[in-house]
Length: 180
Image 1 (cartoon, one colour):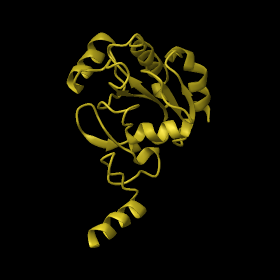
Image 2 (cartoon, helix red, strand yellow):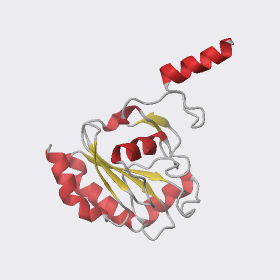
Image 3 (tube, one colour):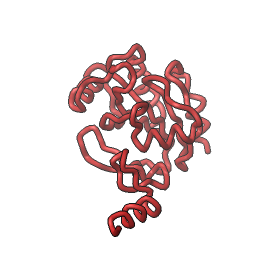
């Protein structure tokens, strides 16, 4: 009886999600636990006050050349407080089968990326809490690799852009977000 009470208490007070493997539900974007591609656990708190573009990426996709545009967009606006955050995922067509080490090497060598890369996450099958949060806020599901979420300095979702929208098409949106 006591174990049942503790479990129910955990569910009600902490937002415990046993199927997701996380112990507490984050109250906002910046508190969601993530893991850097090198393996370090962290949150997105270090990006408070910046405009973010969160992208689910894959190395073997027809949209993979968008890495080049993401890097160009990042370079153009990073000094004004803009950051691209890449989250590799193998959920769409198995197009990101590599390890974190292989993904990092691929991005740095082939596309000369300098923006932050994170560990592989679930987007579709078993969404990572970040993607569950963003998809809920957007009111739609990511359909493929290189879906993009533009997030304002306050951590609120501005807009979701599907894969076909290239990074360089986002310039005006990024500038508007930076101006707020």
